[in-house]
Image (tube, rainbow, N blue to C red; front, side, top):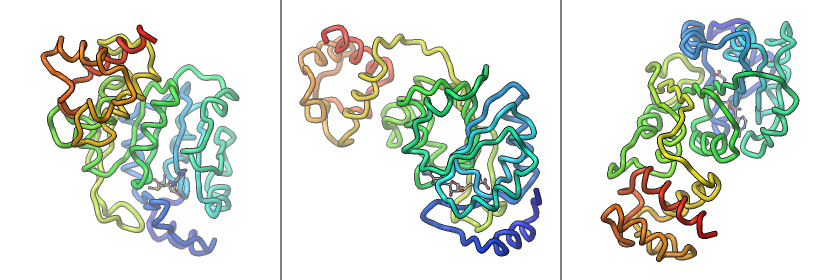
Length: 279
Ligand code: SAM
């Protein structure tokens, strides 16, 4: 694998590959950054890693060197011959050419045996949130997610109730994961160069403080509560038993005129558990 910008450009040109903005294609051309991701993520020889969007394979190469097995999803079939060339020395990399958002990840994972599961990726920015939401809602038991994301999006992950960035993603993430920033990444280490800076964040699965009776009901409730951010719960949750919801809200000194952005994870869990009891 050649990591210099010139070598990668030459290879992509030789293979007649053109970058596609619509797929969020900004490839890393700095070996030091990749090495730091691998070290900080603590990838070990017994880990199974899912990578979403291998691109030309620069991160994949180091993942394959350090992990037991790597499973990649790449939407752009035009990258197939580039990836085949760059990863030809590995037998522990499988690439599925498919839109990750449509993949049946649980089924794909059933083909492998592993102890710990990581997701490591330089995510396509246009679908960062849907990718993370999918990993959570599909109940893929990922131990750790290490992803490069747009700086503003990463900052939103830890948003607290009452702040303008607080949304369903913050509720999900903070329920399931310990979130920490691993490093800042300059826009200069990509080709083509994006208009924004990035950060690498780590999401480490935690035992949540609050017990959930029915995860799918919780996901649906949180999604519906934030459906129209400026609306009250009374308006967003019309299809639910509002009197049960009000009972819980009253315990926390709120009523149905509250907006989702004001409610803590604890309250969402309490509402979901109350609704699941009466189902
Ligand atoms: N991992 C490479 C790197 O760091 O150099 C490429 C990262 S680039 C930011 C994002 C990659 O995700 C591209 O290869 C792009 O084609 C791929 N991609 C975009 N949308 C996708 C989707 N829905 N499913 C799978 N891969 C996707």
